[in-house]
Length: 157
Image (cartoon, rainbow, N blue to C red; front, side, top):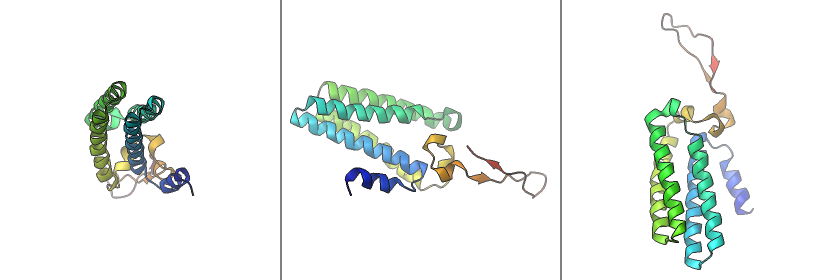
């Protein structure tokens, strides 16, 4: 089994938050690849790796939910913008040290997402396209404040 199919199999059944962690892991891998390309003098390879990192950061930023996460979404937007800038700068000056700094920052936030992944309620605030099929159709039963009987269930999307 090649590495790509192994990675795809590893994501089968993952929650939305676990998929976010996987995106961070991919960004870190591409940052290491860019660093390796700096060492090898491979300008094209460095650009390809940096473009992958930028794509991941833009994807994550485009899916932020300020309506749900307010200050957290704002903080993440600032973080993604800073990582975007630092990654481009590291590539422009071909700096292994700056790539290492970006890796450390991304790894710190990735580790926070790992903690969030342990919280079953965390998936409810994810953008719909980052949720797994099971998470998209979680049924929630509301309880009326006047009686203890459930009201009509509704689908979260």
